[in-house]
Amino acid sequence: MAEVTAICVVARLHPDSGAVGTTAIDKRPVDGPVRIGEYGVYGDVQADRKHHGGPDKALYAYAQEDADFWATELGREIPLGFFGENLRTVGIDVNGARIGERWRIGATVIVEVTSPRIPCQTFARWMGDDGPGWVKRFAHEGRVGPYLRVVERGSVEAGDEITVVSVPDDGPTIREVSPR
Image (cartoon, rainbow, N blue to C red):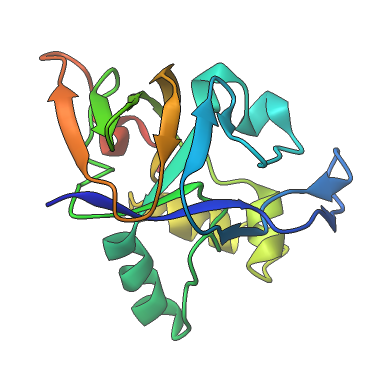
């Protein structure tokens, strides 16, 4: 069964040397049910809404299976929310999801896969790499995770099932459209 293992929101804003001057990548899990609206998880912040927010990038999902891959590769734990994700999932190939695919999360929320995450220098700095190395490495592996649009609002919590409710026949997968 595919499910959400954590819902994560910004723990605190951090100064960042990028154009925005601050980053909201520091996300951590919250307990209990959380409301999901047009712009994502209530209580979350996107410091750079041009690149990481708005209705078409309301939520960012990342798979535990991919986090486990990176934990092995990097020789360190990848805590829930550490990659800036709002939803940590298990049991669903988020990178094999097709653009336009819809998922039901829990009883009420429906989301639509819109685009892959494009790794940026803020993410690289968060990982302790100021050069292009981390961005290229992360993208090259094809484990970037998708952004999601909220189609139907509601509440979700850790342990909620994810059900794929529709898949477009001709939509490319997140992996296929990810920059490499």
